[in-house]
View 1: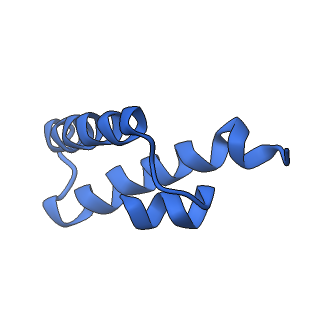
View 2: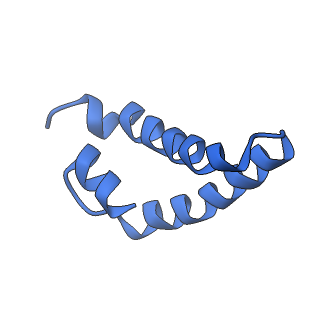
View 3: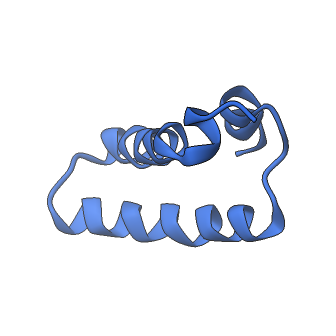
Length: 64
């Protein structure tokens, strides 16, 4: 989680951001399992979605 934030945002995640990721990834894993996604693909898909969300954020798109 910290490596992802440092790579994309150049900083550590804020407390709220870390909490959201900690809650979202397990929910995504459960949803993927319910959809029949193979177990070996679930982690990659969940973390890919988190990375895409970080890259789509305003902080990444605009230079201050």
